[in-house]
Image (cartoon, rainbow, N blue to C red; front, side):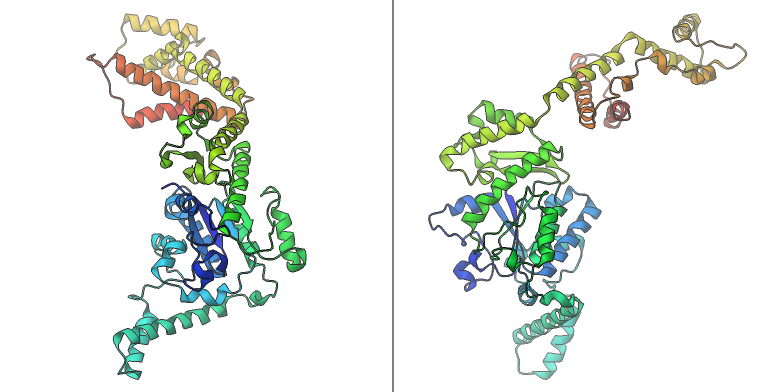
Length: 485
């Protein structure tokens, strides 16, 4: 299911928990709304929540994300990791240092992304335990069985788990920096900013949800960190509300920033959009009509992490339902205006010139000359017509032959590039964007030409089925001649 991913960095998000955390210490979309009439289903259906509850969670998340990228590539992180579009972070994280170790139930394994990432990598996460292989747990059980012979096996197991958690917690405290006791505690500021920058080439925004109200409540180092990142986040990083967060307040504000971030990345050529999809939004109502299946109401883009589909009803959750389709149309129009149409026109024209040159008589003659030279190299027989063609081609390309030396070697040494069409001259002053578009248009024209050839010759006795490697070899060769200029 396509959902917008929210990464919550907060050690104690009581306002986002059922009963203020008294019932279950876990944030949920079933609670955390200041307005009881707010459409909770709109949030549950369009957003997915991930939670980093402690500073150590944050460190592990960054480390495991980088390990997944190194192992499988950036695009695998979408499926096997957690690539957020929205990061909500509290500035204070110090309480999470003491609470996190007691949370290792299955419900938390679903919401804390480091668990499934550690499974994928075969790493042992700090928060969750595999009790069947935990050596300290096994040893503690043996000791406890001797100390408390009247205890049941369940009691022994429960007590052993408590001891192991305490041992690991004490070990973690020993390894953690001593200045975590800073009374201003701005760890969440750094955590949110660093993770947001980690995904800066993906539509991702960072929004503080701290109860801190202003500069007097924040360290000078954190204020400087905000300043460093403000341009990366359109001057929104560090904007504080000074009150407890609620989903119906922070999410509408966040999606507005997310749409702005998407536009910014399109301008910077960091993400690729589905132009056909955008045009359908502006030209026809049925593609985004209210009766359309929700799964098809999506915004598609490609970043370094691969293809993502974001639900439109989540991306525009801040807009009233009755006005939403018009808002989507308007936004699509803004994205289309960002496209540099002149680049597409130029690329299409140059692509046609290139393929016309390949289909031209001069290129055909050049290929024939190479064929005859190869036959001579292989000591194959040339009849009278072949020698006549060779003489004509040598004359056409200005190759003067010394009959006392092997002809193929003289042809190989001759500079024939000036005699044929050199496409590099056509794209010498092209921008990288224009060059990429020429490659795309050329590959598309080649594919269409090949499909047309196969259709025309499907009933012919001569119907070669070109292999996939050979097909892509020809395409890549053509593309390289464009990109290398």
